[in-house]
Length: 190
Image (tube, rainbow, N blue to C red; front, side, top):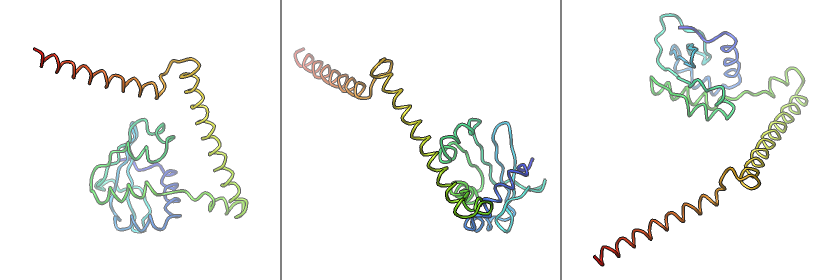
């Protein structure tokens, strides 16, 4: 079994180094091994007594398997929760549940890392500016999508509006009920 690549191990351990709560959660599972499958790649890691992860020994028995779909890189653009919903976790229930909790809640404290290079004030401004820029980009993308939807529903009607679909569905329901009543009347006459 291939271990996680060294840069990925280092990055995950860096995140764990910033999150004492995560290491405390993982420490009881010292010596437990897990595998991550993302077609066509497959790699394993081992939980250490300090809560950090390392490469497993070749004879290590895998207790949990995390299978991710091939579309994971695209799903990641939609957020960590979307990836977690698509993941299939098998094996020891308690270990799997703990891993899922840590993965779901582990966050990078970029401001802390940047403060070591640029100082506290500059790091805070960089992180705040980046968050504002990302929020602006998300708002611009949402506005663009709304404008496209309006164009294709109002100006070049290629897509039905939600109100039209709801009205049409209501009309069909009323027609179905009217036909059922008419059939009952016909049966009563016959």
